[in-house]
Length: 122
Image 1 (cartoon, helix red, strand yellow):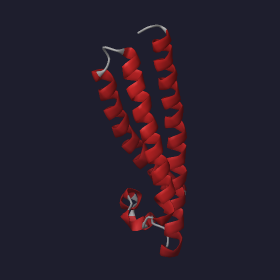
Image 2 (cartoon, helix red, strand yellow):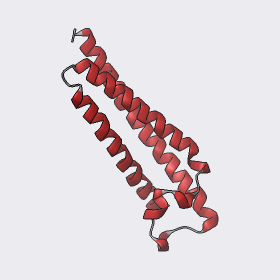
Image 3 (tube, helix red, strand yellow):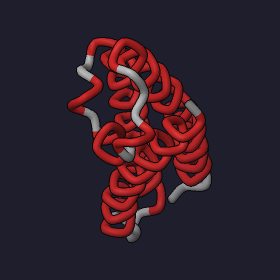
């Protein structure tokens, strides 16, 4: 089960990395106005949080054989069929919720920075 969690963590982290790169590009594009940049970053990061929560909600109903985790799991380490659905769904749900918690904290920090820049008059 620990190997499944490791792969789940890696796949979700990679997906969040691509999302973070996109958010960073938008923020750099708005860097001429710090308040707008952090507002956009906060909004897009909160959107990523909502997507992660939705993915966690749908994880128990998703066919485990159609997940990226299942493709990365070596055939000799795949659990038996009757156990696989529960193991993959549980690992993915826990991982999505963990990343949703972290991204929500990042979004809150960005909103606070946007507020501070707004109060500073920028």
